Length: 168
Image (cartoon, rainbow, N blue to C red; front, side, top):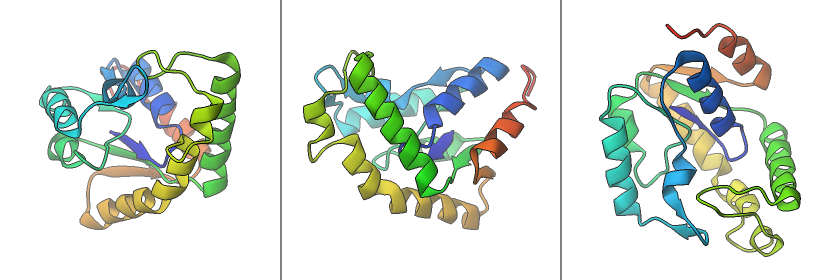
């Protein structure tokens, strides 16, 4: 499971790990957002991710707080992206602006909109609301002794990724 703050690069890294190892990657956002930016009910999310995490192999690019215990029961390794705020914030702003301009489809056919970016439910607002909580969760997992790799800089993740092969 790849875990980190919003904008840290979880989905990109999870996808790249999947490409290098052949392990199946599951985009959490694609299974938690319906068209029109409607949230899949949390109980249904929990059912979906319980089924995924009961499989022998999987890579998730996040774990929402409403069901974070589900992957933790079966996870072999947590890849934590604990980057400085300026790194994740910069990535998030750049990604959000790119998506607004190119209108790329994301999360089950949704698109970024100026109205959405400026709303109280914006991904940018969510970043500030969730940053400390997600970083605290990483630290707590470290203290619990979970099997983790914690990357504090993107270069560390890149160096580790370069070591992976299909038999990793």
